Image (tube, rainbow, N blue to C red; front, side, top):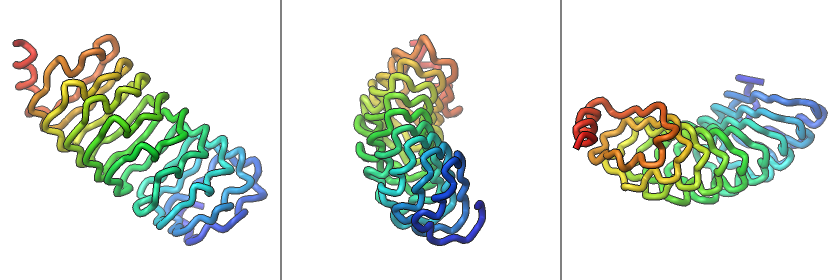
Length: 231
């Protein structure tokens, strides 16, 4: 159904497709999804809603999708209330909300996503991260926060993400990090940190040593970091 002009996804529109596992509704100009639009899709594993223009989405919309593993909402949830939206997606492993005009991340946004492994929040307007931002995502392996407006990463922001293996913070506006900004990232393998950070030190990466394989810094600050590391 990619590139169709649907506007409204009506109740039970897919009701007879009880074995459907993948549904692509990318760029279909959807503005509204009725509460029972996905009724009958209990076997659905992948849903692509990229490039639509929802004003609101009810949390009841996703209620039938107990087996959904991958959800793409890129460009689609710019004015939607997100708190509680994903609570019923108990099997979700991958969520893409890049380019969604998100300005903040509250503790209730990811409530219930206990199995989530990949989260893409690239190209939003997020300015700040704190210790409650990702509290429920204990199974997370990959987190992309690149190309936001992040200026501050509070101490303990990632403390509950003990299984995280890849963190992308490239292209933000981070100038200063707390000593404990990366506490808890004991499984991290890749850290992308191309930002104008002025106070980098080896102490900030304490605990990552056994697994960290890739560290990307802003080239203009690498020399300064190397000098400090020799002190």
